Length: 281
Image (cartoon, rainbow, N blue to C red; front, top):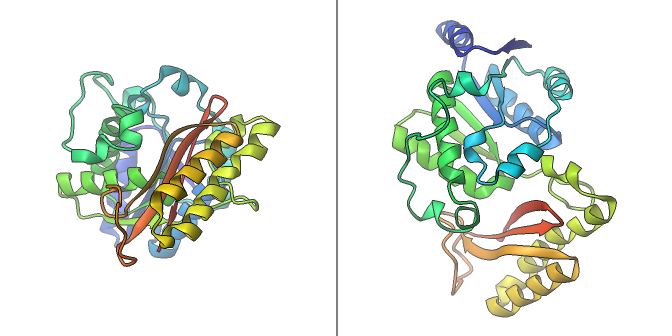
């Protein structure tokens, strides 16, 4: 595994490998790695012969400065995990390297309703920040394949939209969520939960499973009401519970049983905001 801190050095190496016939895959992360990230690397290595991972906590995508300050950092352990997983190249830039002119007053992207609903509604500016960093990483690395996790479902749709906007020849792969044995989606934020909060946190997956079991009945309002009550009983403060179309996350009112649907939840357990989703068909 080779570690790069300067973009010019990484770009030179990637271009040299491409000229030798390598296909490239990219896994962008913000560090604090867990098994879910490693599954992304493993999936990447199954598809390409040059795997690239970035570790960069992007200040532009945090609408809450306190959330940015509290984001867990564990670089030494992250690098060890990536090395053990067989990662070829790791990009570990500074903010100055990614945003040489600063991270204020950056370009914006036309994302449509994707940035005004669900995560976009509760985290204004977040997806513009995601696009601002991803546009820089993707134009630098120019990967043939990009791998991201299903847990951040809306982010996956946003990045696919960005790839279309930038007209980049990149194949996007959404990798299924990795869960703990009790169903909790693996997340870097989980390490901030207290023991009691960790026990409560599994209720998110239980509620998603309940929605999956009950949605086919057609009684959407009842299903959502029970979901909200169960989250409240587990001491969650809920931002949203949604049953939506997979293609654009618009809410589904009358389901025909055929249209691809997904249930999505965002809720606070104490000060820790957790998100999760489950495909319904």
